[in-house]
Every structure is written in structure tokens, then in C-alpha cells.
Image: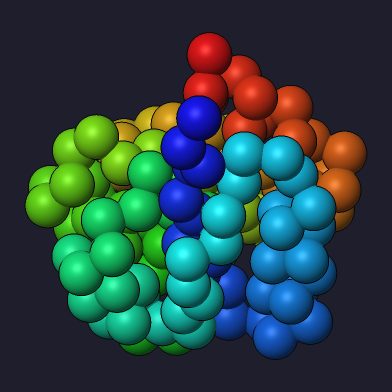
Length: 122
């Protein structure tokens, strides 16, 4: 069985490392890259064609919602999971509007991310 190829896009280095370490422990998941900005994420996604992008909403430069839309325009089959500090209804609507498959609050990422990934992969 082939592994799910994941690109992590997170502006906060400790959280980016934590996400990468966590995902690498999961069977069937391969972290294929990490990016800090929306521009880098788009470039990396176009080259690597990940199955899933875990994307910070508060990126420097292009925010996560714009980045998600541009990735989905180029790679419509790629699942995008928005991870954010803001758990408001406004952000949930923005995540759905940009084509994200799921939305996870950073304060709950350690509880919810695995369930979200499993749900998307079904």
C-alpha cells in the first residue's frame, strides 16, 4: 500500500516540527516537505503533488486561505486541512470557501488531527 504524501505548511517552527514528528509516526503517512510561506507552499505543491497539505491559516505573505485556493486550483485532488489559531465561525466558513477538506483549531490539533486525517482518507 502506498503512503499518503503530506506537505506541512506552518509558520511557527516548533509547531511545524511537532506536526512533522507526529505525522511521521503514523503508519501510511509520509511527510514529503515543509514550508513556511504561502508562496513556498504553492511552489512545493506544484512540484511534489502531495496527497494532503496541512496548512496554517496565518501564513506570512499569502494567508492560508488564499494559499489553499491556489493549491486547489492547481491540484484539485489534493486534500487541504486548515490549521488555525482562530476557531470562529468566520474562519470555518473561509476554510470551506477555499476548498479545504477540514479545519482544525491549533489548540486542539493534538486531539483532532488524527481523526480528521482518518475521516478524509475514508
